[in-house]
Length: 340
Ligand SMILES: NC(=O)c1ccc[n+]([C@@H]2O[C@H](COP(=O)([O-])OP(=O)(O)OC[C@H]3O[C@@H](n4cnc5c(N)ncnc54)[C@H](OP(=O)(O)O)[C@@H]3O)[C@@H](O)[C@H]2O)c1
Image (tube, rainbow, N blue to C red; front, side, top):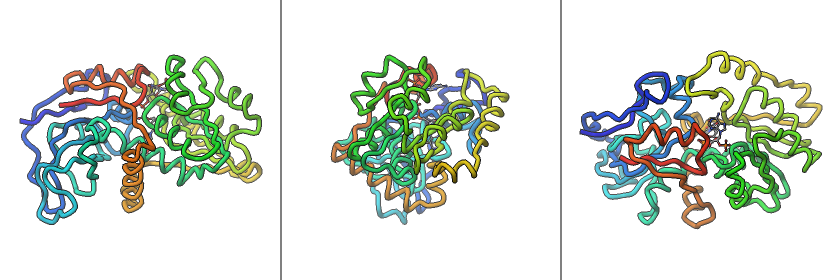
């Protein structure tokens, strides 16, 4: 039997459970089977539990990413072999299981000396940060960026990537007790939640910033636009404001959706501003070659120690509720890992 972490139904933490199931199917010609050693949690898992994900609804197996050892490959697979260590991306969930069978395009071979915790934790966060900071955000020398939840997975990665560009100024929001950690990671101006981040950014940089990675949406989307300097850009990457309490509030969801519509093309033209949106899963669906180039580039940078993923904590599958609360209760700095 194979253990897995499931979301039984839309609801609170009690919907996260460990179940046993039969082994995964034998790999089809273009698939591989992986014995999973570590899985990373993401903020997106909260959206799924609360029924806020458009493409993955409970009941389902949790998890967008994991790492492990290849134990079997389909007959057409020639890029991966049994014994290889791999990072695995499961855009529709399903990564949190002792053993999984996935398409060969869902795995990336990693060096055997990389820990499984790190291998499990860089795909979603660093790729999101990479494409939004560089491809969409176009961050340049001397630029400036506002990164929300700078101690979270994407925030941690985005800070490090932004700091690979010379003379970039990074503003980052996080709970007060995380400020030393985000400063050590490269944030120049940490902002806590008793402060109004719009006022704080403009106090330091009255002309505004060149890039805002907006993971909040709602009324904050308007604030993001107000913070841009000429030629600046907002990249919308999330809707964290939809998540308030343990259970979803449909009123809050509606309000955030409504407020996020607030873009005035005339104002974009008159201010020389751009707005962009990013979704990693859709990038992989629609442009897998670009996704893969980014995946390999990030692996290369981590292997060369140019980037340092941070593991916040490691839990057993059986402690999934505590592990999940580590994120929901805003305690994590870096990635939360669970293991079979
Ligand atoms: N577009 C994409 O393809 C894509 C991909 C990955 C992630 N994202 C988005 O990026 C954002 C960050 O994701 P992540 O996985 O990096 O996050 P994460 O590591 O899970 O970050 C969790 C942190 O966010 C902060 N936070 C702020 N408001 C919160 C709330 N209402 N509930 C719980 N925590 C809250 C907390 O830290 P502080 O309170 O200290 O700030 C918490 O520790 C999310 O909005 C996610 O949807 C988008």
